[in-house]
Length: 320
Image (tube, rainbow, N blue to C red):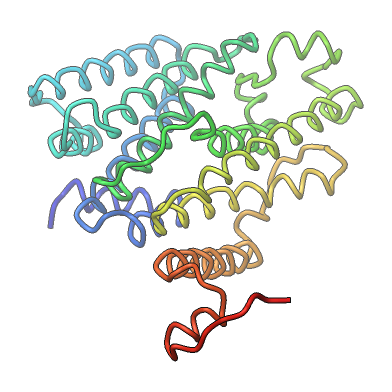
């Protein structure tokens, strides 16, 4: 068995059952292992920054090494001193199918996201920086998703392409807000802290809750625009991946609203059976709608009596 594929499966299954199932069920058959390698490598890299490396010097050294590794691999050079997790990245790059691919965009943009996180611990950053960070993340996720699902398919590159991912990230930041603040990650722009009069130590205060309300509204707007893009896709597997991705976070938005915009430490809703049941139902509904749409595209645009007449040679009359 391929060593890096086996490691990738183990990491992904332990970290995210949804990501594992998405890769196994929806990715192109010959790209399933690479999809798992991509998730597992960046899961490991993110955990190194967030959990295992405690000093800024260690984090900086790690980021520099990973960035240099990416450059070496895309030059066709594979260093000999790689750890097993870095071997996953090496195998992933070796399998990259074309220059300037969605995979390369995913890898480079996601590493930029992780570097940003590593460098901002304990700092308040501005709205422009956080917006660029989310744009980079949105580009990474969508380019990666559409590389692994329908690799040879041509997807539209419209402005709403990344909106669902940005909505998901806004929700993700709300979900982890209390934990992130304790760890030194401040996901509230400096301008918003000043405008709302937010105290980072008092998440129960009205000012904080008003900011959360605005973030929920913005996330919902992003989901609406992003789902319009997903709905426009003509590949069912990509639609399913997008719908399931959104559903995972929309249940958290609903929980935040029910709580009166007071953020909790934990949101078990994303793992409860009701969420999984909703995702199954969404999968069925999206599939039926997609198949029905394809059938309509292949049939002549005739009203029922015209279709009957075409089979029986009976003249038709206008409907009254």
